[in-house]
Length: 171
Image (cartoon, rainbow, N blue to C red; front, side, top):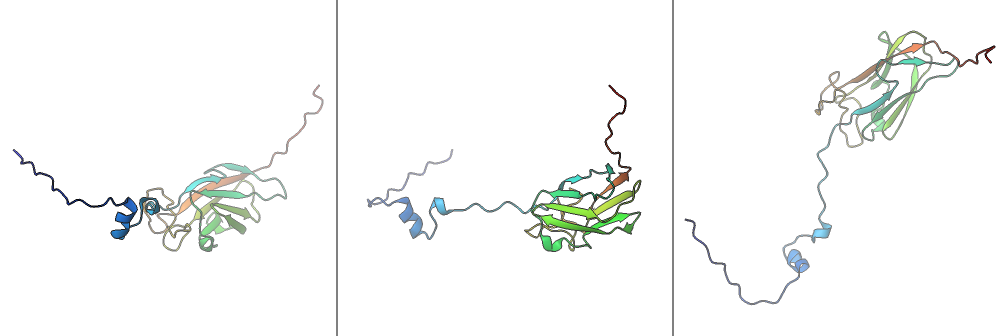
């Protein structure tokens, strides 16, 4: 059977506060101790409009805006025309874009109806990054991988705009 070890008896001493004991040990009091930040996670896309494969009506003379929302604030310096790509049949399409915090807004210059377009957001070492320097996790596997593995892509199709109409002769 295990033997019991009697507790040691310390000589009488004056009571010491917790702060003094901590200060003597070179530590900070508990209220000053900060938790470590969580393990950095790669940013992901949480939504895109239009949705993957969606048909989009483009009213005549009015450009559409493509919106991509990330789960983290993105580094604007990584938002370049090499990392944000809009194509139709693998041909580049002219567009402008702006980034605000965790949202990317893409405005194509001119889309042709009944065509499939694709937005590609480049991941990997030279791709999109969040403000902590983590690269885009376009395939949602939780690991940072090179492009094209971690690229995020989604297609959409433009269709004829059908203007609202008021029925004639209906009473």
